[in-house]
Length: 130
Image (cartoon, rainbow, N blue to C red; front, side, top):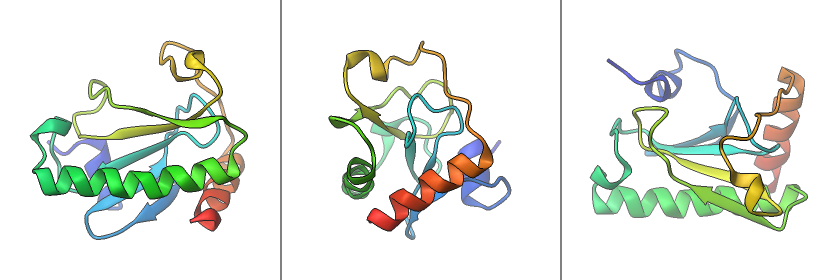
């Protein structure tokens, strides 16, 4: 069965897209820890990040770096934190999260509730910085 991320890649489920090429996709997390919290995925459906081919994994990280630099430009943060958990969705993905301290990347924290307009505004700002 296709993961929710595969359905996003195929256009069956909408997303707040940040960047895309033939192999990778970046979009806002709909349950963000911070404004600008972005997920970066390979379009190839693979459950575990470290099962990806070396070339695909390296490309994913280079793609994520470009997105992270754009997030950093438009976010009021000290850094863009990177997390790979791989437990909540059976599709390899990287979390890029604007942070100012360690607590900001703690996934047990309450998630932000943003309106569609807020999501779109954030996505537009990040896209414009790329």
